[in-house]
Length: 413
Image 1 (cartoon, rainbow, N blue to C red):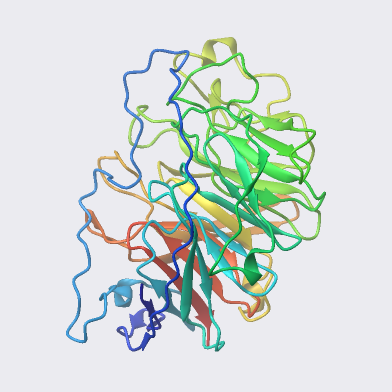
Image 2: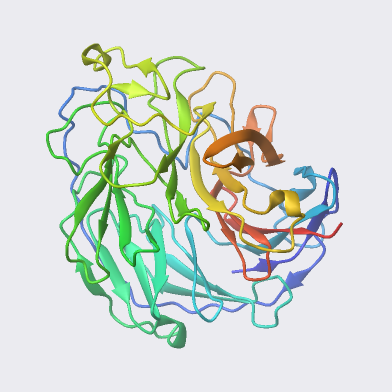
């Protein structure tokens, strides 16, 4: 694997400049089988494949110096911001979690691996990588607590104790909870620990649009760190792959992906706020604030329906999100929400493939705007942002499962 450090500044970015050394360590594999369950509603639409969108992405060619040649000079940012490659050759890089000793853990989907990236010399580029798990079933979600790495597969959450001291020789995982549904469609999970100490684990709808009697589907669940006391926290959530808690209020905010096949411009993706447990966010009856579903909307909005705090772009595939808690971005950006928009897979005109920012005033959203874009060039995408994470030095890290990279965005004035 390789690690890189190029930068691009504002609207006029520079090309890849530097390479770092190679370090790799293979870990023992952990196997897990999965079953695909049928949807209660007969839906002939095949599950979208994130790794193969209809947009014809062209792999980046190597440049004259032998680097991967990620064209980050095409990414535009507000004046004063720069983007560099924190690490590349990280196939399928998706969800991000930071360890207590600064290790960046990276989940994947079809690759079945979890990576650990280290910046040992503190120069803003990863210089070591370890594969701490392999052979897993869509290990998209990663979270860290009390020295342990938690990994979410389709039907279970596992835990690697003392992982940062054993990156080259990871321990066998302990099973935290293996009672989640085995449906692959929207079964990959984003996980995080909340300020209440509980691990939040979503269960997506096993379909494009359907209604299931099992309350676990289309929900955000939570449980104790040991896997006990599993319960539904929020309902009517089609497929969230990113959430965070607002520092000032400890309230949960999350993205949600809208259903397909209602046209290019409907329904919207959503940014939601869940100040308390027991709320319903509409799916499958209503999408966005008031778009009734053609099939399930006839019965109207459900009890305890909570409209989104903001409707996002239609089919942008809003995934990871974080509140900016660093101190190195200008004051206007502090407290904003950054969202990784993975990009549409079947829209006539592609949309998304970018990082957006949301500014709040009280509990309301006052702006939703593009922060970083350029992964989509015309109809071709060379990269797809998945998750964002605020690093201890205030930089914003962005994962990209198409380019197999993690980027680092900084402000240098």
